[in-house]
Amino acid sequence: MLSETALVLSVSETMPVATTAHESVRPGLYRGLHESHHWFGCGICPGLAGGRVLSVAAFRVNGMSIQVGPGTAVTDFAIVVAGLLDEIRYDEVALLTDRRQLDLVADLLTVQSRLVGVVHTVLDQVDRSGAAMAAHGVPTVSWLASELRYTRGQASAMLHHANDLSRFTQIGDALRDGLANERQAQAVTQVLRTMPADLGVEAEQRAQATMVGFCAQFDSRELGTLSRHLVEVVAPEVADEVEAKRQERELRDAQQARQLNFSDNGHGSTIIEGSLPSADAALIKAQIEALAQQVHRTALELRDPTLPQPSWPQRRADALVELARRVAIQQAAPKHGGDRPHLVVLIDYEDLLGDCRGAGLADGTRLTAGQLRQYACDAGILPVILGGASGVLDVGREQRLVTPDIRRALQVRDKGCVFPGCDRPAADCDAHHITPWAHGGETSLSNLCLLCKHHHNLLEPNPKRSAELQWQIRISPDGIPEVIPPRFVDKHRQPRRHQRFRPPNSR
Image 1 (cartoon, rainbow, N blue to C red):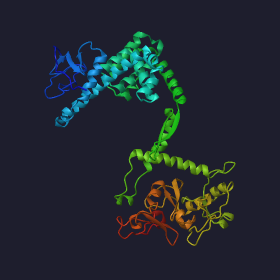
Image 2 (cartoon, helix red, strand yellow; image 1 turned 135 degrees about the vertical axis):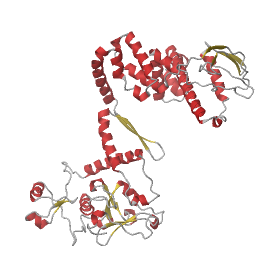
Image 3 (cartoon, rainbow, N blue to C red; image 1 turned 90 degrees about the vertical axis):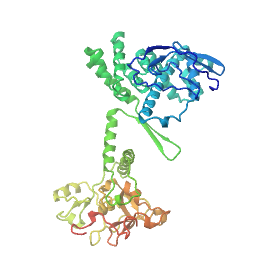
Image 4 (spheres, one colour; image 1 turned 30 degrees about the horizontal axis):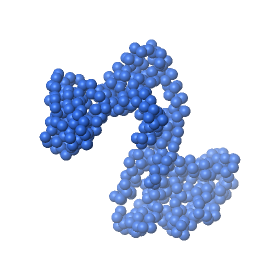
């Protein structure tokens, strides 16, 4: 596009560069487009060319002669900048010192923010003129969406921000002057919109000036939290009242805006997006963070170098699924009339009819006779057949899905995840078919065990891999689940039992 770009025709060396807001601008950001070209100035950033302001430059672009300097028309500016972007060289970046590379990034980000300010200034003027309606018969937002391929949400947000910068002129000036970046400007205008309308013009001007000053100290997130402090600065006599109204308004708006959406990304994942009032979100966040903290690899797993360590975002994702799974388990059992969740008590039937001694919960907690009688006042009796060493042999009838009765029997036998070193309780576990149902496996205690979600994934058989290279599980002859590590973890593949199945003195 700039094959006919001319050399700089005239350069005015004027005042020294002010060492205030533009101190970070370094000489050398704008260099000649080709070896034969010289310095040019296009009015984007002052402070170039060794501390001198280059005020006028002339270019020939596609046969048009364009002068760029003070008072340059924005149309000419856009043509020149677009042409210069087509001719940028990137090969010298790698030759710069580390410090200069970082300075270059800082310079370019400043330019980007200033250009965003220019774009929003023009967009606001175009919207107010009704150009899109006159030329295309549609509002500005519709034109942005249809002609420039922004989503309607993006186009609407862009136009709202442009209108805000027009209303809050000091913020618009700060963005165009490089004193604030785009995110900061957005955060500041959002704060200023929450200011009471009856504070007056003078208070609003002070508020704008205060927030521009804050842009040198705070990022966009921090700026968004300064609304109360801002009112205290510009109108301290009404700060408490304004803050109370602001909190009520924000809660009302948050409740109105609450949403939860699921969208398939077309590549095997679902994107979850939503918004909740902060207090409601805190409840969910606390549950998820607590579950995420519990996700860890056991000492035995750490010996397997092929297992990845989940990141914290992955742990939170797993925790969300786990939270939903727990709710599903609780909701699946109740019948019509809302049967309460079950508490499994172990006791011989004859003892229940007698002195109630020897009773305990499935997790090993012992009960007094008085406690057991209280539970028995409103209890259903589930016959569980016990073998010679109190090993569960069978319960319920055979079918593909694990019935509530079978699950209770698994809870009695396994008491939690059976992977050695795992401390997840039975309520957090899945019932795992050792031999998959699709491969002829039965839904019986001899083919089932409890595994937490993490270890369920680890022990799920992979028919495409050799058995010796996989973690496996089996039920031993005495009815206890045993985990068999892959050969690269233990060349002898010695079966391992969870410590809860080992007597205290065993090794």
